Image (cartoon, rainbow, N blue to C red; front, side, top):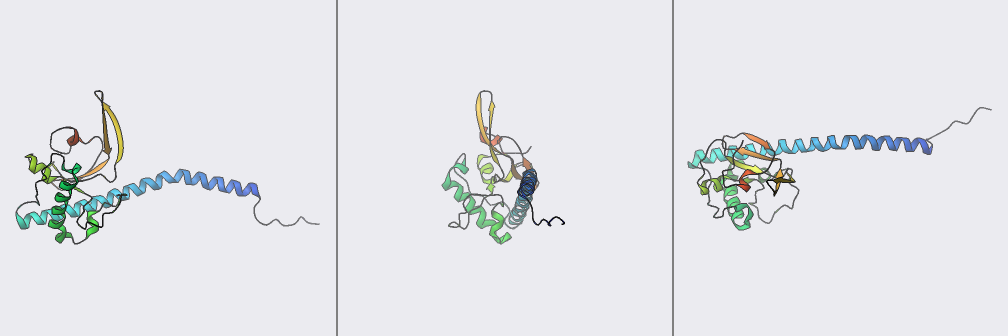
Length: 195
């Protein structure tokens, strides 16, 4: 009598298949995460470029970039000053882009502030630089985004420096760069420039 035909997998074979799938998933997960981060950076760069182009058209129409004095040395830490600067920036260039999603970085994972329609997730540095009287050069940062950044700690001359890196910057000349390292303008009273 011939042996009965076996159907399906044994428990051992099933466990081997599960282990192989788990190992492949563990190997591929960092690759997928890296690809997703690069896609976010590409989309964010595109948003920054569109905002830069809108600012250039605004400047052609009005002779200068949107400006409202922040009235605070580090206005991005003052919620009221930050809202004032961002609201002025948003309403000045929204007619040139006509898409609110351009003002939101795709990598941003925090709460969306739909209650305030003019909220912008990109930092508009130009008003701060002009208010402080910094020279407006081609390597001065115009806009920057920290949504891609992770917290880092670094000791320098016995001082703990906590910063976020990497982040994207759009310079006055329209070039966009991914910057790694501490935020120089946070620690020193110098213009935020790149490099």
